[in-house]
Each structure stands twice: as structure tokens, then as C-alpha cells.
Length: 543
Image (cartoon, rainbow, N blue to C red; front, side, top):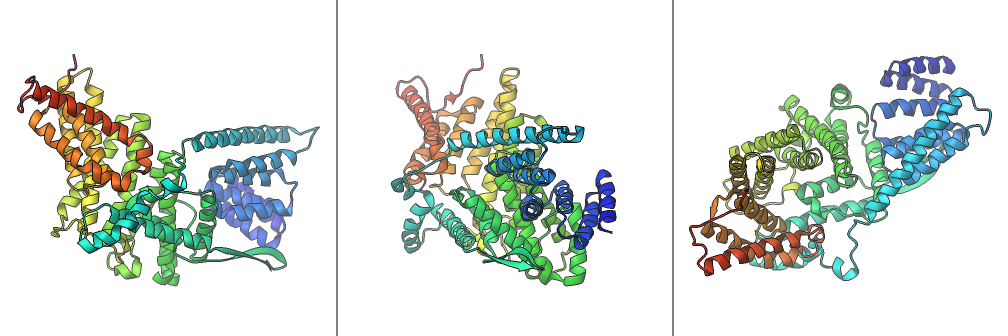
């Protein structure tokens, strides 16, 4: 009977009906629990369905334990590790897969397998070499510098800011983000594993704290600059996600269209008390996969895909169940949380354009940034204070002055980026049109600055971008240009207190600022030498 189910599964697999094939293999496993081929085949289906791969590793390893000589089992384990960008693990699995093949007198099928596995091993070595090269770009700080990291400095500033009633500093935001990040790390390190037997077979039971994924994503949505890793992070994170996904029965297979009917069915059978935590882990898991794919691996298209899955699910739940109270369906199903994820995706749209220089991807970035900005204009808060509440600690999430300012700043900067890129494209062929785009870019970057704390490093960077575009656009007088330089000069000492050892500082931020300050000297020198007046235009020549 198990063999018949296996054959049915094979036929469905060949027809690319992955889900149906997986069900057949599952039914066969119930009849033949020690058949390694069945486990490996089912995992192949789930890989095709884009299941969360780290959830499959335990089952794949079990298949290789049942039969260490089954080459395809090792190959699928290697593929799973490749999908997780873990070449150090996949190399070992590819080597095992090759070793499981006959040494001589290979059949044509085995020759093909060996060729595929050898190619996989070579690709894994290439990926590992690439990771080693990326490690050279990592920022490694000594103990003294570590004490100067923004969140550490912010912690020393908060008592004074609180006593003075100063709610405008960017220290609040990075401090709050770090509180969430540290909580996530603490809970991830508490996860424990206990070996046991189920039905006479070895198994592992996990004990830990729920909510690490929530705290981690809250930190990123509040200020992703807080993210950092040690050597244990990836392993701890993968295990924590496995724990939360299994205990909350999160959905880990298929895309949005596949998940919708599954969500409806579970709602019908189990209600919101079951669906709410499952959706929370599912969506936050997608957010983290988007962040890690893009930020750690440079896979911006993958980052966009996972952010989009999160956005689509949030939008669908909000529309489909608009009559359900927010505290019933979940705190993440609100516009503020949604905008936070959309802003993360915006940054990946920008990075994707920077890689491809595609006009269509630039238009996607512009359209999405403008859409969010239009929403922000429609819900402009009445509160005058820059920071009144901690946005991502609230349940349900609310739009406050701080979050409104932050979203508005980001979206204006993205529109400024789009205008600047269009100016670059036209600089040699149509200088007049290019200047118009540069002028608009400068205005957008200045607008972005208006919604940021003066001591935030991004404030200074946006001022530098504004000055560059004002100069390229030949659209500002000496008077207006010096006014922006005055803003930059006033901001720099405040910025250096908090952000002296930020990642952006290590990547050349201060060199950009230094270049702008040299331009300022040129403008002031020209004014002092009567080579220009306050009404003269500051600009570059395209001749």
C-alpha cells in the first residue's frame, strides 16, 4: 500500500502538483515510517512549494539518519541548506551525497546525479568564498568603540532627555528599538532542546519563550540600524523561528493565494484564538526573511518578494475582516504597521534600481513612495510634538506624530532619489531638463529633513543630498545655499554625540559631509572676494 501511494506521489510530482504529491507521500509515511525515500520525496515537494526551508531541515536530517547511503536524501538536505544560504552545511551534505554514489560502474542515471551533485558542491564552495569576502566588509569594533554604538550612547542620554522633557532627539527611537532587539536576543538564547522518543523513534522537544520574532521585527520596523549579529545569531534565529512556527501552527508553505483559503478554513474550525498567533508568526517571519535576504545576502528581489507577501496578507486581512475588532484579529493588522513594512520594501525597491538601473523599477519606487506620501498627507496628525508615544509598543498600533514624521521623511527622500536619478540620466543629453529634475530632488531632500530630529545622522546626510542637487540644478542662490550649510553646521556636533560610531559612519558618511563642507568654503570665499553676491546662483556647468 505504501509503495502504491509512493507511485501516485511520483506521478503527481512529475505533473508539478507539489501539494497533492506531498499528501500522498505523507500518507505513505504513515504506513512506512522508516522509508527514507518517502521523507526525501515529501521534502522535495515542500521545497518546490517554497516552504520555510529551516522547518524542513529536521525532517531531511531524519531521512539521512534512516538511510545514510541514500544519495538523494543528502542532496535534498544540501539544497535546503543552500536555500538558507548556509554553504558551510551544504558543502558537507553535497560531499555525503557524492560519497553515497557508487565509486565505479555508475549507471547513466547515477552519472547524471554525480554531475549534478558535483556542480552543487562547487556552487556551495563558491558561495562560501563569497561569504568570506563579505566578512571582510563587516564592521568589527573593539570594546571601547562598542561603548560608543548609538544605542549604548542613547541609553546614557535618556535620563537627561527625560528630565529636560526633550522628546525631539533620535536617541529615543534607537533606544526603544534596542530594547526590543535585546529582548528578542534574550528570549532566543533561552530556547532549550530535550531529546525524547515518539513511537520508539528519537525526537526533539523544544522549550522556549514565545514573542522573540515579534520583538525582533518591532525593532527593525522602529529603526533597522539597531540590527547586528554575533556568530550565534543565525543559528539561534533559525531555531527560534522553527519553535514559534511549530508551536503557533504558522503557515510555512505557498504564497498569498495559497494561504488565504487555509486561513479561512482554520478560522472556521478553530477561530481567531488559533489564527491570530499563527498569522503573527507567519507575517513577521516573512518580514524577517525579507530583511535578511536583502540586508545580509544582497538579494533585493527576494527581499521585495517577502515584504510583498507580508503586505498582501495584512491588506487582505484588514479588508476581508474589517468588521472584526483589531484586538481580536491582531495588532499588526493596522495601517501604521502596514506602512512600516511598506517603507522597508521601498528601500529594497531603491536598492533593486541601483543594481539594475531599470526605468521600470524606478517608476515602481516612485509610485509606491508617492502613494504612501499621499496617505500621510491625508492623516497629518494634529499633535505638535515630534515624539509623543512609542509607536511599535502599542496594541493596537497607532499613528502618532513620531511615526508620521518618519514615514513622511522616508517617502520624500525616495522621491528625491527618483528625481536625482532622472537628472543623472539626462545630464549629458538634455542639461536643461536634468537641472529641473535636480532642483526637484533638492527640494524633496530638504522636505525630508524637515521631519527628522536634528541630531539624527540621516538629517545630515539628506542635507548633503539636498546641497548636491541644488548645485547640480543651479536653482538656489548663495543666500539659500548658505542657509542649508548653516543647518548642516548646527546639526553636526549633535549628530556626532550619538552617531559617531554608526554603521553609516564606518561606511564613509563623514567623507561625504567633509566634501560638502569644502564646497561651503568655496561659496563663502567667493562671497568674501566679491566674486558672488547673496543673490548669485550656485551651480555647476554641463558644458
